[in-house]
Amino acid sequence: MIRRICLFILSLLLFAVIAGRGVARDHELSAYETKTIQSRRELTRAETELIEGSRNAILRTGISESYFDKHFEMYAVHESPADRRVVWIFRIGEYETTVQDAIGSYVQGTERKYSHSINSVLPSMTEIRRVISRKRAETVLRACLGKFSTTAVELGPVDNTGRAGLFLTASALTILTSKNAPNRKKSDARSVAADSDLVKEEARRRTPVILGAVNLQTGKCKKGKGWAGPSVATPE
Image (cartoon, rainbow, N blue to C red; front, side, top):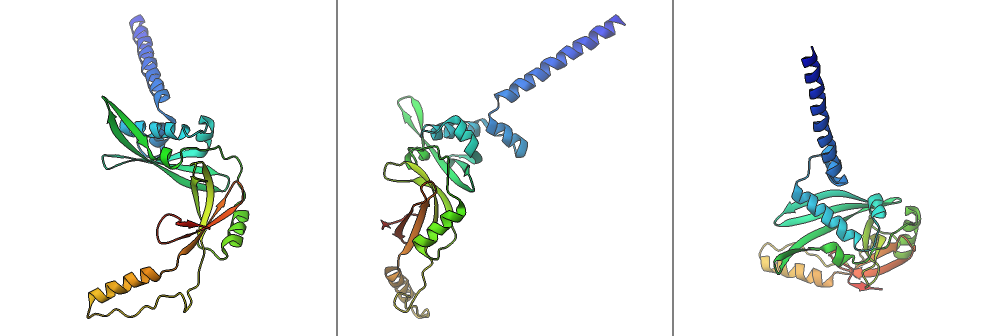
């Protein structure tokens, strides 16, 4: 009887040690890894290192850990030789947008160094605390552009210093008239070259798109001219 009691106590102690190790392992997991385990799958060590490195790179732009943890959420991580990237979601007020950090590496002496695109695109970030309402932002855009296309929220540089700001962007809806509309003709099946020349001519005659961006902190709108592509070519 005494032997059975001793064996029972020994088994309880062994269970407590194993459980304690499990709890310790849970504390070692990062918040991102724990969340991912619960929702999708466990991250690899390489993915976890990419996420932590990207997080530190964003913190180096000037925001606090508490601000980061409140407004940033890890959305996706890509870890392959051709694509090493962490995608974050930034949320504040009524707005949310994605922030992508591409990670490169190089060897300096005997040590491998890592570079983060976020530090080149947005080298300086301030902690955005207040933003205007979406209704007001769209009113400002309408006064700035007239009728506009679908809006997008972007975290981008405010000026040439690289200081980051949050913007609501859109392009003006322009109506083609006989003066600026391309003189498009039916494709001539006799000559592929002629059709290619027509496309080039239309590209030369294409009118620029008017783009607008409302700073969601100040409520001010800036306009610029651009063509098909991601960037504004000429500010107004």
